[in-house]
Image 1: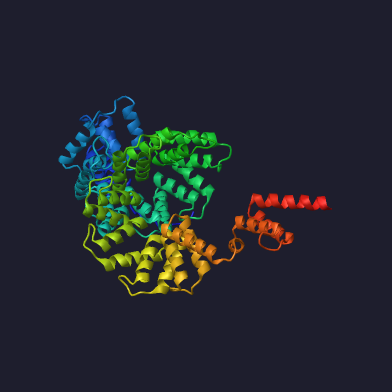
Image 2: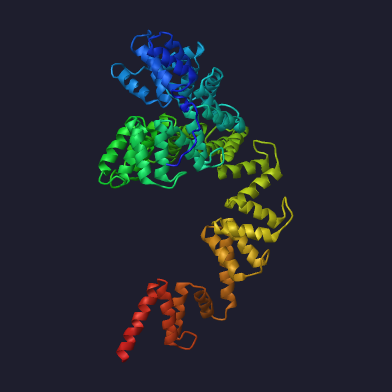
Length: 598
């Protein structure tokens, strides 16, 4: 494993903060003042301290006022501290899950008393719609209060909301600054979220090596979730050269600390044949991981059930169930998939309203494609309440995250003044940038502008270049314009054959004008030719198999021309090679006739 300088000098905030260390020293010596220090450390966001606070309540050292043990063990679990999840299992082994909003009510009461940790947990409830309705505005308000109270997890979520424009006005620069600062101060959640942004190039420049370095730094500080992420990077070739053995080793190490994600990684290796003859065991392990809350396992199982295969029979109902479980935990990819499912009615009754709710949730949780979908619906009023200003803002956020369809829509908004003050030059520049980055629709827009001399000085050569690029990407209008350029000699030397080629491509995609041009060309050719034979011969030489067969018949039967069996065979053979069955039968008939004469 390559050595990487630790990014988090305080061991990711899990054990080595000063207050926690003081509490440990006092606790070892039996000093009752330790609890107050543990509580202070937990309130700042230390999940190990939260676990210790839960222990005090669980063992009766401190009186539990109904949900104190549950709250602090939950906080420890949310902070990726594995013993916290074990405590939760123990807690619920002899208690019922709180009904309705009772746990949220407890959190809100603690929040009003000034607990930054409770503000964070309550904010998460609103952020994912757990025990209450999905409400990103309320979630952000609670996260911000948590951050201001000194809680690192609250700071992380505040940063994410600012980056995503979730529940607040987007402030990408300020949000990224807060996220990186929080990660650098040792918060695991912030480190993982920042690394994810780097890995996928969402809201920041893609840098997979840097992302893998952050995961590796967590792993070097014995953080199991970091070990899992390093294993995943090795297995998938993210930031490291793909190395299945290294991946499995890291998964095994994470699993040895009790990490459910580590077990999921091992199950992937078993299913993928990296660990031989253990595919059935791998599937069983993956199912267990999903049941124990591993979101990555839920997503993979949903994909496996949706597709079906040797190990798992196709089962859309099970796929939806696992997507739903992951969505309930706030996974943006699962929420987007549920939007698609309820839009298409694949395995469920179509429900456009429910679909849009999932799109909005996915957008709030940082998925650029969902942000585009929700933004377009809001901008146009098709599927959501029309609000051009809000719709534009969502599209802009998606565009900033690198989603090209959203950037195209934003460019059009600037051109037309939809949801934003009209700024045609800015819209054109956005289209030009998209065109240079390979977006076909923008190639068409910019090419058309140069072709017609609209908004810019006419430049037929530049128009031809852009139409050519767009046509190669199967943009039907670019194909039509390319045909025009070749036919009229605009930006390129006139070439009737090349023009007809591109008109035909556009016509084949249903372009009405191109269809008319191709049809007119065919009719004109028939009228200008002295005989039908000339028309078929021209078509045959252009590669049409049916015309090749017909020309062969002309030569075989001497229809209007001198009979020539040799040429008939040549044309039949050409047609046969292109799959024409009539030509094949004609050749066979000629061979039979020749054998009889012989």
